[in-house]
Image 1 (tube, rainbow, N blue to C red):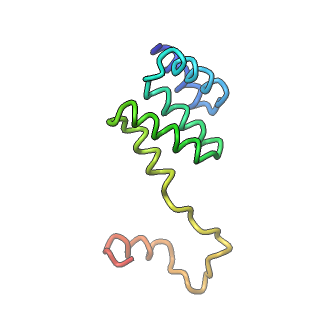
Image 2 (image 1 turned 90 degrees about the horizontal axis):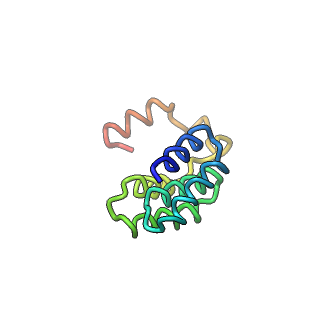
Length: 109
């Protein structure tokens, strides 16, 4: 089982989503309580642009193991607001990126 998880992680690192999905599914089918495999499937769903499926799988992993940090982290990443399109920002009114960053650090924005 560990070998399959390692193979899945390796495939995911190479962006071979189908291979990674196959390995994670084999582990999850053999052990439905394996939160690591379920989180792996959630990460694949997120990479494929399916945030709802990713959220559902991440929540399922947290039901299996409430201490699963990767699932909690993925949920947090999925719930971050999308940045605005560059064309939607008025460059005459927007502060330079470094000023916005400094203001955040100073607690002003």
